[in-house]
Length: 390
Image 1 (spheres, helix red, strand yellow):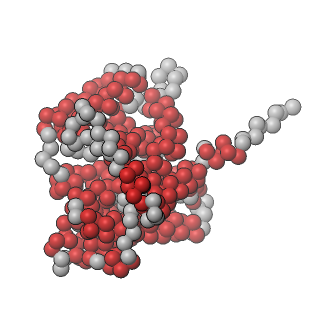
Image 2 (image 1 turned 135 degrees about the vertical axis):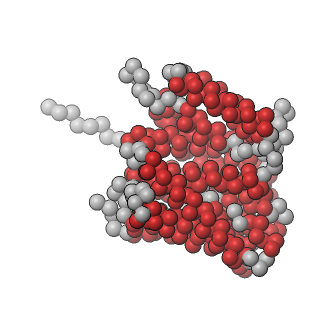
């Protein structure tokens, strides 16, 4: 007689579901937003800015709790996303140069059109044009839970396309920061980062599979990137590319082992904490959103971003530069392009560099929040109400 399968406890099933992680991120983000606009706003601000500077750290090291989460713990998120993308490259969704070209070119188009949209609305205000790069980046941390919560309404290949696009978007955003907003790089630290990356790649080629080797190299690489002036979360991207991903002697791959270990930590720890500490924006009066800077940001995220991503993607497909993701329809890609308007982490970072004055920065953050919220709601409704794919 065949044994019946062991029933899965509802709580365990919820904790393992994509919807559970998305709900945790949403609730944590709303809690941060609520506290920032409540009588406890001062206490919340004190928690976000809790000093955590290490005595032996460099001057560029994170100085408070929010900075350590954004620059430190989020490195684990980018590491996990890169490992998932590598899995898609092996499984076929991103297995060729033409398939990788589609999200890369979509990311380029999705940066150019929002920047031009912002400049078109702020051209008459020279002081405002410095923020042209604020709406160019897609936040992978907030986009991933939304598409995972949609389940089978997003084809696996389309999900891989969007996450690859978001990663390319963030990497290009970091390049923009370095070229137009950052301080001159520290070349010795940058050289050290290059050497560490080369050593980890060499260890991979030599068959080294000890995880501690790559973990130690990743920590040192994070410190070198931090000292160099580049965004230290790039260490997660580099480590994800260096980890061995081929099976050996019937054992699990190091990349797969790391991905399984990090998934619950990132889903239930890193992302909710990131949302709680970063979503706490003091909301100005609604009339403040009509000022040139927040209006340009909202237009860039809500209009420019999907137009750039979807237009470039369909143009590449029409010109036979790259095929559309398997199982993805133009309607599905249009909804995913709307989600690309969720720009938060890199957008907030650029906003602080472009407009350090507190008054203008508050309105800028409100524009980022409003544009990201509209994009998330529009994309989710578009995909949720569309007919389910076959």
